[in-house]
Amino acid sequence: MPIPKLPIVILISGSGSNLQAIIDAAENNALPVEIRAVISNRPEAMGLQRASRAGLRTEVVDHTQYENRAAFDTALAACIDQFEPRLVVLAGFMRLLTDELVNRHLGRMMNIHPSLLPMFKGLNTHARALAAFHRGEITEHGASVHFVTPELDGGPVIIQARVPIETDDTPESLATRVLSVEHKIYPLAIRWFAEGRLRLQSNKVWLDDEPLAAPVQFAPEDN
Ligand code: GRF
Image 1 (tube, protein in one colour):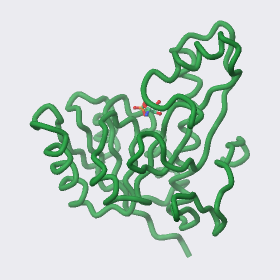
Image 2 (cartoon, protein in one colour; image 1 turned 30 degrees about the horizontal axis):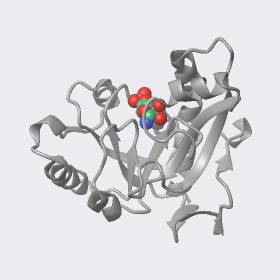
Image 3 (cartoon, rainbow, N blue to C red; image 1 turned 90 degrees about the horizontal axis):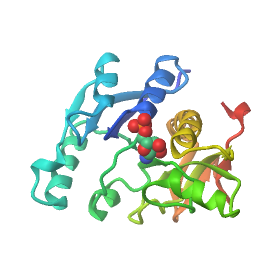
Image 4 (tube, rainbow, N blue to C red; image 1 turned 135 degrees about the vertical axis):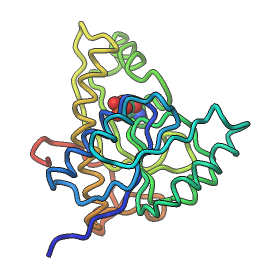
């Protein structure tokens, strides 16, 4: 029997290449989700065009139109709620969310972060990884998919993918290499959740009814 499709909404701020990877996986029947809406805080986000091209509903909740974070989050929460998603997917969504909004969706909100968490939380991860590489501290960089908790980029990590850092890398070349693995691990983590194999419980990730001792490490054959 086919698995019922999981209703999701996807929040973006920019290019939307992770959004595109999710759209493509859903269209290829590799991901049992129904994308009910794509919501952007930036009206000019390129990802909105990707969503429209795929025939998806788009919404803009422009943070510049709200007096403060709480007012923006109230509007964003109302926008999300009308679609009754079972999972909220942050895909390059560049606004901090209030604890209240995060807690409303605890265990039902995921994010992708361009580093091997807990290294390099926050912004400019590729430049910081490159600087650490040149100091001889690391040889690899990568990306992590995690459940969102009130601690910024601090929620339990589900899966990570590693990429080598090369001597002649720039932040841009490293970002490109990391993005290509992001596009593999995000649809995979969402698929596990849609299949009912993944949950957050007691601040731990559970996969197939076992708590993960460490994040799953992506191997291409997992794809
Ligand atoms: C990705 O690197 C993601 O990890 C980070 O923001 C970037 C978004 O890229 N949170 P895109 O909009 O999905 O192309």
